[in-house]
Amino acid sequence: MFCNQCEQTAKGTGCTTIGVCGKNEAVAGLEDLLTHAVQGLSLVASAGRKVGVTDNAVDRFTCEAIFSCLTNVDFDPSRFEALIRKTVTLRDGLKAKVTAAGGTIDTTAPAATFTPADSLSGLEAQGAALNFINTLDANADLQSLKQITMYGLRGLAAYTDHAAILGKEDDTVYAYIHEAMSDLTRKDLGLDQLVALALKCGEVNLKAMELLDAGNTGTYGHPVPTPVPLGHIPGKCILVTGHDLKDLAMLLEQTKGKGINIYTHGEMLPCHGYPELKKYPHFYGHFGTAWQNQHKEMPEFPGAILFTTNCIQKPLDSYKANVFTTGLVGWPEVTHIGENKDFSPVINRALALPGFSDTLDKDSVLVGFARNTVLGVADKVIAAVKAKAIRHFFLVGGCDGAKPGRNYYTEIVEQIPADCMILTLACGKFRFFDKKLGDIGGIPRLLDVGQCNDAYSAIQIAVALAGAFECGVNDLPLSLVLSWYEQKAVVILLTLLNLGIQNIRIGPSLPAFITPNVLDVLVKNFSIKPVTTPAEDLKAILG
Ligand code: FSO
Ligand code: SF4
Image (tube, rainbow, N blue to C red; front, top):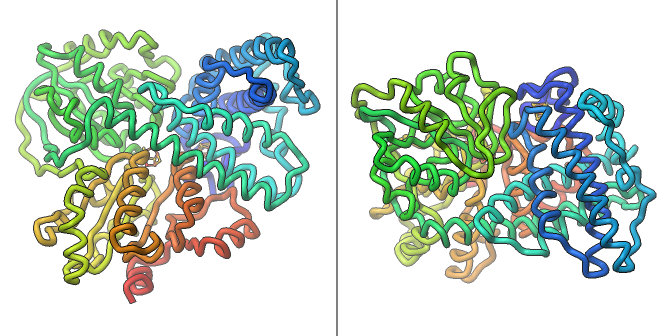
């Protein structure tokens, strides 16, 4: 196997025998084979669009298949087998429709005519033999650019899938995904064209995140400032992790009046700010921190645990029987809640487990500072900047992970001077989310914008501030200090670059799939820089 798509890749170069994430050789091969098969489906779908043939089932499925290959989503070989077979069935069905409509399908790429083996072991062998990343291009820089787009597509597919679940779709997004997956099979694209393809991924992702924002706020209301307890109360309990608001809403509805309290974990924390979710009295508080601490935290949780999107790690024996997955997440032998979203097995497990017997009074944290709330106090913020009460804004956001170098993010937040505001989002905030950083003129200094996908909200805040100050986003007293781990962060970075945002600092280390020459292009065009030390970076930013 070879996989280097995430930040924790082995030795900073690539996982070759087993993934640091727990992905084994079989699953790595199946992911590669699925990606190859989806390229074939995409070639047909792109040819179809040219003659007016589209198929929503194909569009939705394409995103599910691509999202399944994102880090920490699915580790179950049998689910990949089903996805690969369905890809080929859909491809062949669509091929017939496209041909009947007069379309021409380019079958020179092997992906267009790929035939899956009859057995799971046969598929695993096909996946291993594929040597997928090397099929992208023999030239290291072109391969690197194609990898950037491919990983960006995984993030884009995730957000597109989340939005579609809430009924928000746009054909331009699906069309790009199919076109880009097809383009990854081409060998005639040069450096500039592949840079453009990657930036286009960022552009389309802004649309996908806008759709998701509309889905979340349209269904559950705009988040409002809400204190979230970090302790617990006596009673049976369920812990929900991942990113899916709809799964949480359905679980809250199904647990009404059952004496079960619902706690969030990881990226579900911002859900407490949504009016249509916080209205449930049994939606109590937040337990634990970011995804990489689940082995330490989940054995301590005395109830059932539901994983809704990505971020699953191998469940330890001490709590495996309490774990359930839904949506695209999967782990072999863990009970999966299918599309009917009947959470009875989760509820029954929670009722069978002891739950909390005592009250733990701990601090609370404030969530709910997405665009509507922040822009609601924009006049105060602008006045404070003009009066020099606010000197600078920092967006310290992105992913958390296990590396010791991630202390950088805790330290920089601690060292940012008291006359600066800090916006944060995604799971990286768990390094500092419970710090008491005070306020400036009644506005808390630390504002939690939300999940990783709420980067859309942060962008809207920056654009609105730029409008108010009649300048460009790059001219605002705003610095972005980002952390990355997986491919949703890759696509968000592409979105920021496509918007022309300069001087982004990124860490804790640069992606293994970016070659020195490609990095050079990014540095020259966007002045992107790796993080150094908090003191040095603050000095460079604040002068
Ligand atoms: Fe991922 Fe990063 Fe959202 Fe985390 S982009 S790792 S679980 O911030 O949050 O999904
Ligand atoms: Fe390694 Fe990350 Fe790939 Fe897992 S997803 S195999 S940890 S590079």
